[in-house]
Amino acid sequence: GAVQLAPGAVLAAGRGLLFWQEPLPPESAFEPAPFAPGVYRLPGGYRVELLLLQGKECEESIKFAQTDKKALNNCADYARITGSLCLRTRRPGDVFRPAGRNVGKTLKKLYNELGVPLAQRSALPLLAAGSQVAWLWGQGFAQGLAPTGATRTLLVVRPEKEHSAEGMA
Image (cartoon, rainbow, N blue to C red; front, side, top):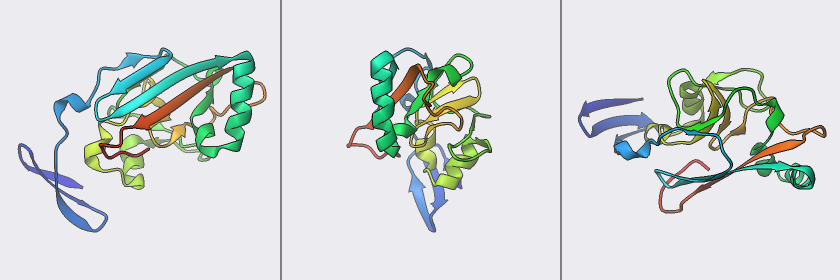
């Protein structure tokens, strides 16, 4: 938890420690962007590349991703995504269903469970359709979106974090 003692002065507790926490600068949040393939450079040193692959590229990427667990986490069957996707940061009420779990969690609960520092939470990029988070920085795609042999259009997210800043990659 954390408590704001004065503007710019936050006392936080985490992992058995009590420490001063720097509040995020206002520019750490970014304007939501409707889904479109491309490269997005975001505040806080985050970079996200979004790709839609079809045909031979789709098949080859699925085969490669099946040999690399981290790559597979960032691939989804585009046809399984319902609603209009938007690249943005978290909002109150956002829910994510981690792959391999059959239960959705609010991002607040999930970030607490994962030990994500409070200062980073509002800057982490995600892809969402309404309040349903389809892809989450550091976690990959939600349960039920993994590509299968029937996948014809593959959505690939390539996240990167600049080395100069801390991040959950």
